[in-house]
Length: 276
Image: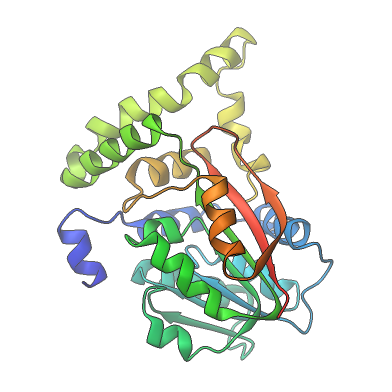
């Protein structure tokens, strides 16, 4: 099924349109945060001389970060608006650069992936759980990791009942016509941010955390864009830390770095290493 078909059936959120609005806020500080995230999680100071594939590039921010760190970058995304965002960043910062290629494609298209070859770093942050076939996507990216390469992914944690309730919210949001989606979005905003705003209000600065959210976000996402991305994010799947660890261990990968959200609903981050 095409991206347009999934959108028309209310089965997919317009991630790319949300990213396009986010690009209006992109600045040097957000780019620096993305670069730091890559350096810290990959345990490197530079990606000079290495190949990097961004599977589901979204805004293109981390493709840009990888290119600025010296990598030869290949970006692709299923969402045409996300592809446009990534191309916009390439045009803005690395116009006509032969070291950065951008294409529209799906991580579920095995024939496409087989034609890409292998990479030193395979990056897919917050993407594979939005494909509609998460376990197939988790399997497919393994073919992109070269010997001695690294796989850096993030997957929504299995928050048990809470995860299943949010799945119902996401389906309700996407089933509504655009002008009515506020009926789901506003109550969700209150649910997500109400307690934080109350605590900040007690400190006489009710929107402090909201205003400064992007400063601590490694993705550089503003609070509003993050809320819309979360509430609308469909397809939506999730997995426990143990499930992801066992899945890749069975395929010969070694876990090198991990960041978890405990029992929360956010993304657990993993960096795996392929030794051979």
